[in-house]
Length: 184
Image (cartoon, rainbow, N blue to C red; front, side):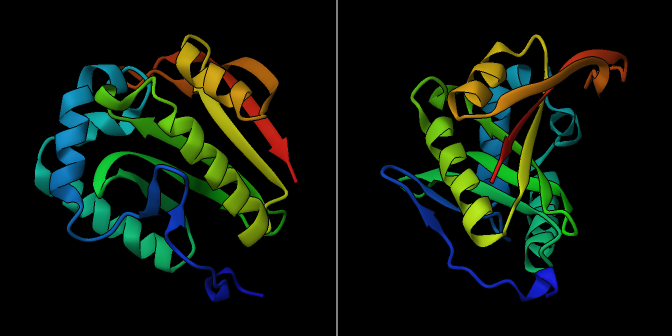
């Protein structure tokens, strides 16, 4: 079956959060959260340096919504009381073997409260149940202890640590990175 024919319900509702596809109109809220956390996020996530205004975020939101409809990627926003506080997503999808990359971010004001753990657990459950994922993996910088702790706390196991797994978001230099995996 073609991935575009996959049907499932959205949004994903957890105890405290609503997780839904990024969509047109989200640009203003996304930009506000990125701005509040720019220094923190930009040291780990290369896309942050390309988001310079609300229009950049609106273009991204519309592009990601199109990718969601086509089932090319699942870029979801994490909402607390209808306010976007971060995001989780599935990208680099290999539908043949059902291997998928998982990513996440959270506005600095909302970190340390368990929201990303809750959202990531819900995303993993969604990927296995509704997308038929066989393997999910996380790539993170070996110095990003928050991301490492999150991966381990949500059941991912380290598979490798190597130079060049990621590049530095600011200058493209090779960084020591880790790959974590979890299997169906």
